[in-house]
Image 1 (cartoon, rainbow, N blue to C red):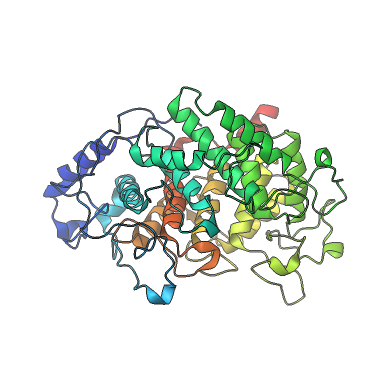
Image 2 (image 1 turned 90 degrees about the horizontal axis):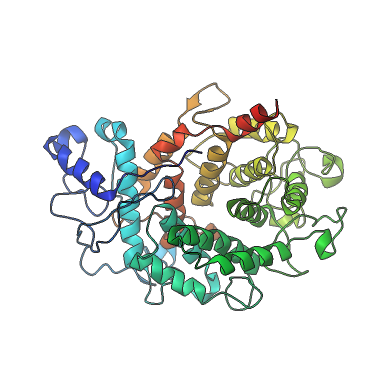
Length: 471
C-alpha cells in the first residue's frame, strides 16, 4: 500500500465554507445541519492543536478551529445515547444528522467522510469520562476504550491530542505484570490484549519515540501465550488447536471472533503469513468454515457446505445464527468476512478452495442493510469486519451474485452518513454485543471510515500481488 498524505481538517473546513455559495436546496441540506454533519461558518472544534502532518491512512488531521457543542449534552456514562445503562425502551431514538443525501453530497463523498469523522471525534471528546475511559461499566472492561482509541489513532489524531492522551493513560493502567493489557480479573484478557497490541502499536508509531516499545513487545508475547497450540501443550487433533478465546488459560472456549482479532493483531505488528502462530490459527479458522476440508470434514463436524463461517464449533449452541433445517450450523455475515480476512492474512490466494468458497458466499449474500443471517444484530461489528476484509482483498469494487459491481467504500460512506446521529455518534437499536453503547459503535465506525478513504482505492490487490511475485 502506498503511503498516504491525508487532507487536513482545516482544508476540509475551507472547502466546506468555500462551497457555502451553493444553495442549501441544491445541496439537499435542511438548513439545520449541526455538529459534525456539515461545517458551518463560525463553528469549529473546541481545541486546536492537530498539526498538518502525515498520519495513518484514511484519517483526518489538523483541527485548528473552534466548534460549539450543544449546551447540557455532555456524553459521560449515563448520558442519553452514550454508554450509560439505559434500556433501549427507556431512551428516545436519537435524531439523525441527515435524512437523505443530495447529488452534491454524493459527488463529494470524501469531504462527507471526513466531516463524519470529525463529528464522531467531537462526540467521543464529550463522551469520554474523567478517567479517560469510554467504557460504560466495569463489566464491559476496557474493550470499548480500546476500540475508540484505535479509531481515533487511525483517523489521524497526533499522540499529544488531549482526548487520545487521556485514553492512553487510562489504558496504561491496565498493563499487567504478565505483559497483557486487560481489565481486573482477566475475564477478557486475550480479547482485550489483542486490541491493546494494535492500539499501542499505532500509538507507538504516532509518537515516533519508542515510548511503547516494551508494551508492544510484552503484549505480543502475552497474546501468543493464550493460543491453543503445541507450544502450549495442545496437539493439532484437539478441536481447540490454533484457536483463541476471550480469556487466557485452559478453561477458555476458542471462537473465530477472538481468533481473527489475534491474527490481525500479529499481522499489524509485523508477523508474516508464515508465522507459526498464524499458521496454527489457520487450522482453527478453517474448521470454522462450512466447507469440507482436510482439517474440517463436514460429515464428522455436522456443519454445512455453503462456504461461509460460523462463530465456533467447539460449543455449537453458542453460534448466534443457530442451525439450518438439516441441523448444520448456519453461516453468517460478520464471521464470514472475519474468516476470509484471516485466510488471506495466513497467505491463502484466491485460487484456494477455502478463499473461493468464502468469496462466493459473500457474493450470494452481499448487503449493507443487515448482517446476513443475523439481521440487525451485530450490524456495526459486521461493517467493521466487512471493511477490513474487502480492504485486505484489495477489492475496489465487489461483484455480487447478479453481476452488479459495488463500489463498497462509497456505499458504506452513504449508508453510515444516513445512520449518523445528530450528536455525531452511531448506535444500534439491537442490544447484541453491546451495540446500544454509542461509544463502542462510534469507535467501530471511525475505523470503518478510515478504510473508506479515497486514497485506499489506489492500493494494489495484495492477493494478486502475491501471485505475481511467485510467477
